[in-house]
Length: 467
Image 1: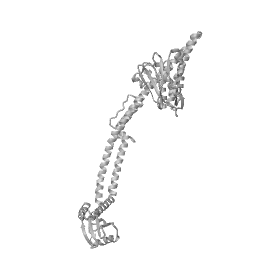
Image 2 (image 1 turned 180 degrees about the horizontal axis):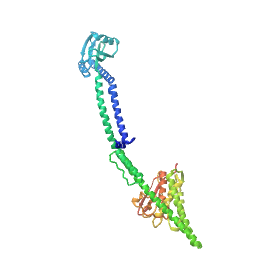
Image 3 (image 1 turned 135 degrees about the horizontal axis):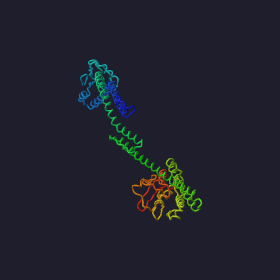
Image 4 (image 1 turned 45 degrees about the vertical axis):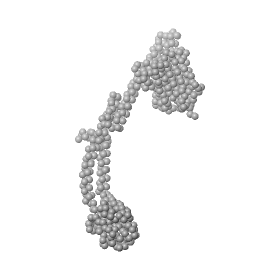
């Protein structure tokens, strides 16, 4: 008993399905009791009245077509009695009786006379059949000027029928309740069992076990959908957890390295080179460069966090050509000292677009910076703009060795390029493409990358200015 109590908990799926099915069965049985017992007599009388009405219409139709021979079949088929009376000669033209019908004769002539004098086309009467001591329904019809028809049907007492139905319904009720109780239990167990298993697996996943595999033993569409969704969520959470670990490791490394160098060169200046102006200047420049790199990393982390939490954009019109030229000019030192070549040949002097100017500046800057890190020995970076009906497509191409196909879908993840082995970039922090992805997704702009062994092309689309 205690085991059953433990298995059937209050508000559990098993209890609810079990309870709902039982209540549903009780409601159905209640309707049966109400309609079969309380309203049986009313329904029976209404049904017989409707039956008499149909017979009357059929009788009128046959009389008008001089087909009195069909009245026998009407009387037999509907279990009724039919009298056709000729007022002019005061005699019956035809009488069609079935067992249990009331016989009129002279005793009921006053009733007929009352109808004939009324001038009505038809009228119904409730009578007592003294011969059988039961109620009788009668329809009086005017067939033509002097001919009338009287149709009656006996209402058989249904008290005994109601008693039989009531007795039968007691057994039916007991059987239905027992069956619903048993079937409800097994149905609820069938549905709840896979859900309980999924719930236990979900608890394991919540505790950090991403090796769990969600499965369903029952072939139920909604449960299978839930299993697929949870497996997808588990995979995504697993990736997020892995990326979080990588991010912490990589950020820690990137923070630790410049801090270590800053400390080392600062100590060197303090202890060794403070008297040698040339070496002191070189060491201080290294400290400044590492400080700049550290500042860049912190700014990128803050930018990425801001983009992921605050997606509000400040849309405005601006000149895309002017923006790209400004960004390229920031890399002039690389052109002069290291021989990098930025190839940008716009077909127009001005291209007006509509977006968040500050954020799009970040996108283009990061994509060019990424191309600098991975371009080939020729150190060339190509920037192109392609015009389309409603948008412009901006492409930044390098001449490096390209990206592996299996890596393309992951390159937008933080530090993915350093996943196997951490490597400090010469320029940038490793968060640039993640920032690009967040900005373009917030704009709902299409973006992507194509790659071959001759280089990679990163591209995105931007809306034209509003006219």
